Image (cartoon, rainbow, N blue to C red; front, side):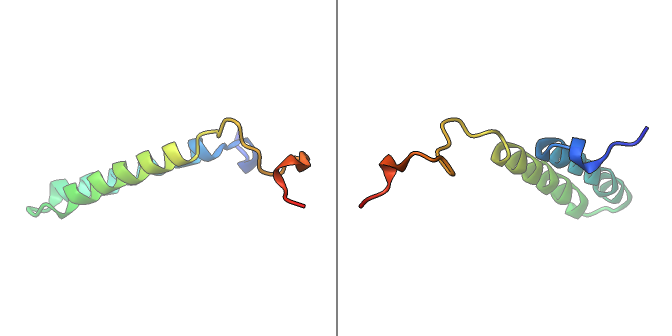
Length: 72
């Protein structure tokens, strides 16, 4: 049974991006330079940023029908 995109939350999509670490680590192991390890660290930083950015916002008033915030 496959997962449709409507069942995939943004945070789970960001976590799915962690799969990009596999080729980065393979590259890091196969090369003598630090480039692969730097790429792997960058992937983890990007994942962490996306995961934090996509958490639900409490007290979000965007789109509310309350007119008390508008000036007349």
